[in-house]
Image 1 (cartoon, rainbow, N blue to C red):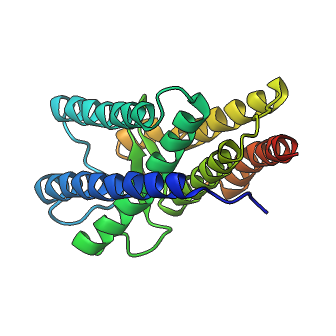
Image 2 (image 1 turned 120 degrees about the horizontal axis):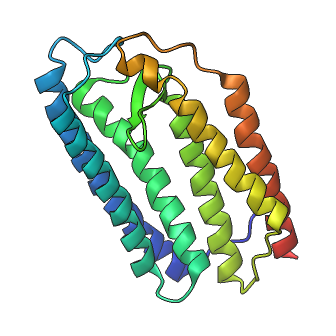
Length: 219
């Protein structure tokens, strides 16, 4: 069982969550406008690719969104890098979940968590079912909660180099999995069935490493 959060941390998380709620609404609204313009008959694969200039603008918007979360995390805690890291994980994870909630409210989409989406565009399009990023987001939020609880109880967070390596390696492998269909989808082909077995493996190994680090740090 995780350690509890202090009242100041809970209050900060509330404000952080309110920010992500509003940010997700803005992001979803932009996507609603784009789909009405470029996909008036419905957002379905194979996709008609947005032309180069608009694609570049979209990539810039996504990069700006990530930068905003980095800045927000820095403002959350000026001196504690672990709290900054946790704030980024919490905000990004919750934002991604709420983004799909807002899309469903505005568009009635996704109709299923297994609907395929273009998840991200940097450095190549990420393709996968909506459920996959939601699972990752929940893991990110769980990790953030664990970090906050450790820091609230003045625990030193102890992560070994192999654990960092497994975590980073798992993240890179997941990104590669999402981008594995990018070339085909850009060319107008249907995406292949999502490889849930690899997804589970690439996510499970970092989870095991993180749990070991948490238990060590809690003692």
